[in-house]
Image 1 (cartoon, rainbow, N blue to C red):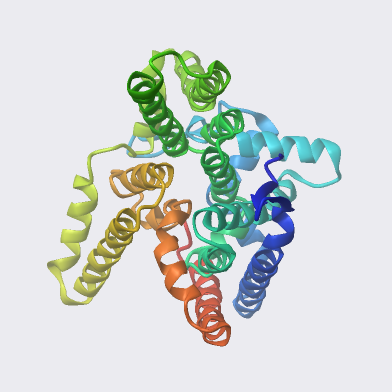
Image 2: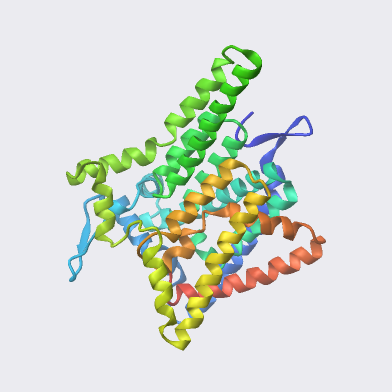
Length: 394
């Protein structure tokens, strides 16, 4: 059985065929967002395509693809922004596509993101369908598409690529395909620092499975169990961290600062992990004046909603793999010490948080669910166009 097939009713049914409604809905939502962005940008005499491919992080990725690592910017305050902070899989793919086609590096980044976003949508559907059913899978994909910062899924950023790899790794883990889960986790680790979340899911589920096997042997069999599944699990666990560990160690060697070299690179961007202290101070500072206090209340409500959805997922007994993955994504996004405006897009890969809402959306009749989804899609498209033409994602 391949990654694109799962058992349904005792027969092999193609997963992609069942995912078609979700993918069509996803494509429609993203197309609406791009049309809104094009119209809004034209009214402001800006290039919508330039906003998607030639600003913020997309410029850093294309520079890595074209020139390799070693570029840095020294700011007047002494901070050093090095492109070593950006993991290599997306620029590698940009370079490959540029070499195989007439596309520029920026064009290649946009193409990779579009394809990866569809792969991510299919992966989210696969996970949600396996845990619940196809209707919940469709709703999960549509909710992911209509997130307020969903326009990032169409940018030459690494969020879509990472989410695709993470979702399919989690699906492989749920399906017991340990080698596939490990390989995909390793690739996710080459994409973003939050690849640690996928690695954690593989390792926690792996350790729990070995503990369960040991208890079963001691209590029921009294002898060693089958060796092949255990070897595959061990291989998957060994493969999972190789991508992230390999890049971090290479950066340490490149900088001459050993295993902690990557942390020094992040420190140059004033980014780190402080348990959420800096973010709490950022929120508290909003309450120093009345207009900004409303933003502070909104931030508190938003964080509370995220934590509540995670608690609901625990109560609904989501698989351990999803709970571990979501916990690490939340921790890394909310407890980072800088770039507070980036937190919404950093949370894009936390798609299991949408599963409780997807189950709720799947209960009403199709017409009612469709009406809610269309309304959210319109709001998301307008917000995305306004956002990218304004401050945008740093």
